[in-house]
Image (cartoon, rainbow over all chains, first blue to last red; front, side, top):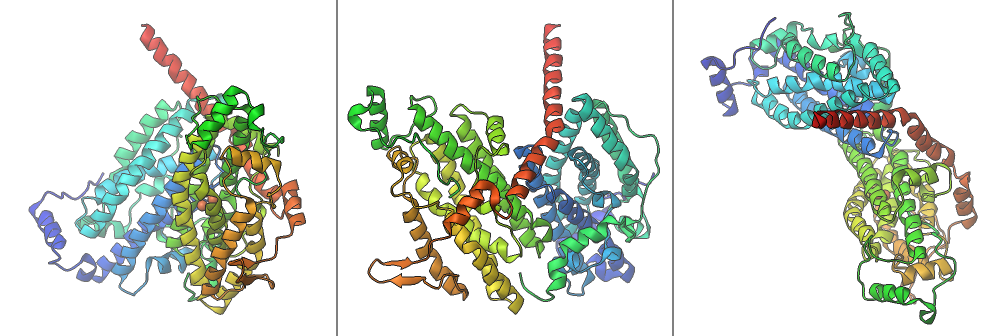
Length: 283
Length: 332
Ligand SMILES: [Fe+2]
Ligand SMILES: [Fe+2]
Ligand SMILES: [Fe+2]
């Protein structure tokens, strides 16, 4: 398993320092393929939070208890805030003058780079929680790794986001445990949710050429490098929740490269409708 | 208002000489602007009226999530989406404080839900109107939160301590909501032709329902007289409605929008605007369940509750298991 580039080497450390001081070229100015890779990497981060934030926000006012209405709105709000930062930086890196809003509202399905996992329909509240848990368990280590990014802009966003996401993970973990080890019905629903969503988790750990570029430059970790920690954490929580980890390791994939499920088109149709129907209006 | 037409004892204010010594002492404390706390003695009518009023207000906050929640997934920018999410989250939070305040009077949140779901308890009529365009997010913040503030600012001084403290917290957030709503209205009213049309249309649809929020005239109502003596109602509905109109007209003028009332005009003599009353028949129909969205709103709440039963049961079962395990460990 490839590991994170060693950030302690004098080279990487020096580069990070220089960048913090604004002395070296930004990674996107070094080579066209680096700009492309960085843009992709940032879209992947921002699109995950955009689409999952959208899904979670669909619950507003419909949750099983008032405390959950509040918590879900709060989670969605955090994710939309993170989206603004990631897509804002993506636009800056791209250098074509596109804002975070342009990227969120004016790209079509094939240009979206989120994991298939986050566009899955909400299902019952258990399915929503399970999806959130499996995502959070990946998201936090991802952000922790990004906090050590050689690109200070990324490290700063990751630092801010990681505070929010460690709370998301704490909450989703707690609920998965309680519902898994709750009544017979809650157990059955959580197990069904897990079985259903499981084939969409593998995509989190499958890298491509862009990921390799970014990892070489110490900007982002390879997806593969996050697997061990995720496995260990998820296994421990599922055990406590008395849930059975599904056997297969088949992974649906394609989202990170722009090949999505049928669901994303409907999400975008809804989300982007005003921007599309009234081009150029200020809101 | 969020609490419209709350019935009290129905008997009017008891004359002082007919009060028991306890009731007299209680009224003296209220007259001296002392706060009544949950453990203090209080007349049954005071307790019942407050439960009705606070729970109605709480229900309004949570049903009020729905018309705005309706637009979160369609908000036109990330910033607007974030602001709207935060607002809807605040409303749920208001519901929570208010349910907690009502619980101090000896009713459980589940009982209050039961009353809401069965139709026994009401919520504000305003939330039975649909939100049809993005401008409605502006109009709701500007007019609906604006009308709510009108009523809630005086309630910060209400005699029941937990209610008063909840109101103080809530009012801060409501005035924030109102400013955000007005900000949306400005963007729309000063935007493209289509946006202007949406803004005017939103004002047309929300104007009279907002006036209804204060409830019908209650200057002759025995319920209101008793509630005012107990300081759980501070102003009459007409006073608050007038204040709202006087405040809102210049704001609409600034936006270049027309209030849908041809008879609206400044009255030099009274120093207030004269305006047309809303259609009170429509109001009573909405309260009876015949508003445009009554079925959807209540249906959504009932469905959330029923479909969430397994979730709540799962959590309590886990809590019991965990307690049993702790007890077993302690016994070893
Ligand atoms: Fe509120
Ligand atoms: Fe409100
Ligand atoms: Fe509000």
